Amino acid sequence: MTAGGVYVYAIIRARRRLPTDVGGVGSPAAPLRTIQRGRVAAVVSDAPPKLRARRRDLLAHQALLLRLSDEGPVLPMRFGMVAPDEESVRGQLAVGEADHVAALEHLSDGVEVNVKAFPAQNALRSLLADDRKLRRLRDEALRRPGFEANLRLGEAVAAALESRATEAGRELLRELTPRARAVASGPEVQGCVLNMSFLVNRGDSDDFRSAAEQFAETHSERAELRLMGPLPCYSFVPAEGTRVRTVGV
Image 1 (tube, rainbow, N blue to C red):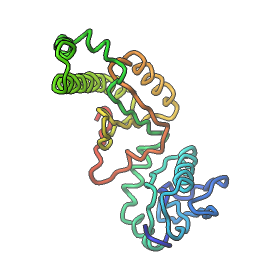
Image 2 (spheres, one colour):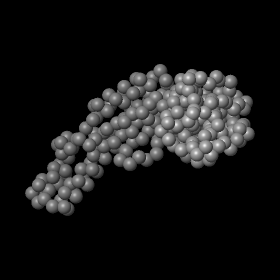
Image 3 (cartoon, rainbow, N blue to C red):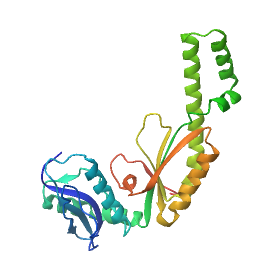
Image 4 (tube, one colour):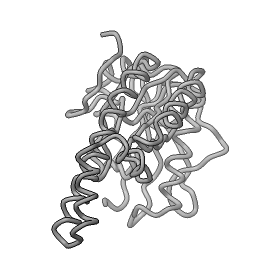
């Protein structure tokens, strides 16, 4: 990563005060400041030399974003965003000011909750009870044990588990989408059949998580859910290639 320069954490509305109980990346923690341009400002610090994705710095970056989002809308930057100097930051703020203002308004009082769904790994008994083809392959493997029979059975079980989890993921998406202001699909994750982020009103985030957890409990033999959040709204910052859909639009 670039040594020196200006480390950029987020874009916020202009004239917001920064929290005094958190610092930036680096050891010791770099003092925070803002670079303002028009109606928006960038939260920055001096970038430490030889910046790396160390645990301490990753946690400091995340803690600051969460702290900022407690007090107003934030357009969070991913870890490691370094500009050459303050003038470069002002130039980017000027070019994107209108879009930044609109995005901050859209994210006002919102948080992100990420939901991932994986095939349930302890559901073989229920799977065999529901699938006649799998029972036949199992019986064949028991009668004539061997590599090929076990391979066919293993592949069929894995495919059936993935199919059931995928269908459960579709049902979960249909259930949770009306509870969110927007949804965004995340990158592919190995073994994951659903990776979605939801923009949720801050005051509704507990109810949203409860609904997802209830679904997970009811469908535990079909899918394993992993929830993260409330998070800064990484998935809802406009960027090329981001697939975001506003609910109801």
